[in-house]
Length: 379
Image 1 (tube, rainbow, N blue to C red):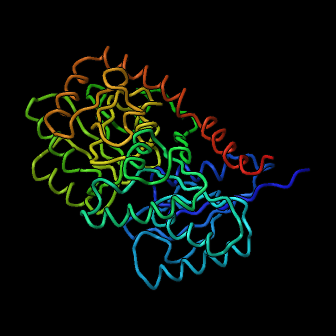
Image 2: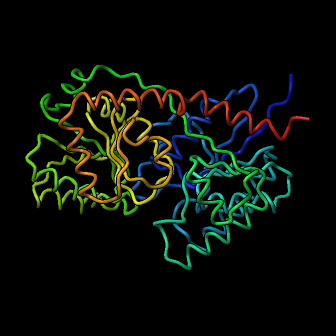
Image 3: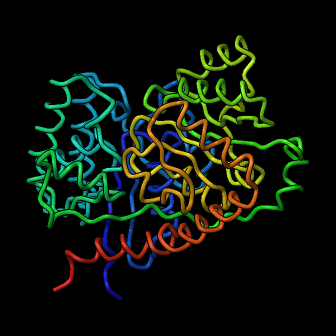
């Protein structure tokens, strides 16, 4: 029997969100007769839900303190030394890093450990827009350029993500692979049944937002959209599933302005929530490929989203939803268009589900990763 390929997955933290879901599915679903996998991660911040604790309780991980989100010279150095020691001990064949901080520390540790592992880094998005001021962005680009030169494969989770990185001079075209995220198909009850379970009004149009309530996701824009919609006296109600540092302030503003929004907090039942809804919405300034929109498409929901990042890989404008300028008035207009036309909602939603089945299946994602993990080992 051939020896299994040892893969070390390194991610800064497994907070609830797209990267954690993708890594968990790789850990859980890749062929264990071909691959021996180890997951290395840090700890989540206090205001974040840990995906390993809340959902993926079946997945084991080695935790390294200091690998998480916050940056500190002392703790980062400890995490870096810990990674070098772990690489030397486990001798992985493949080191696959995810998220910016883990990408830096993990790849540097791999280089210094000198074990000859194949280095792969996935860009689940990028930090080029909407995160830092000018000089910090330039520093990020310089670091990523230097690391790309010592990385065997660069995976972008969307076409626009890849193009943005190449335009910034990060890596070479031949290093890149575009691997779309893949999710298992949801198994949910019917819409009317779920509305009863969730105590939702059968006559109301529900527009659902799922995501962390942080600045890059622009919950303030969602509240502005709700304000525009409310003035039109439409039977539209917004559901918000997610938490984050802007959760309390967003909820307080919605209450003060009597906006048609319910804040649900962090939820485990996103599949059911989308199935019970009519429209999905995202309001971010920047995105890679948001998994929540894949889930929305799987539930046959039409999507309203800004034309940013690689959202266009999921949402085909006027075919599976609407891509708009990231402005409240433009987005509210499309929500209202969908709310007043059930036939259009059904048509766009059905096309979106078909696209999700074709491009964003778990089987496709596993096939892509199996190929790249095997590639360096083929004669």
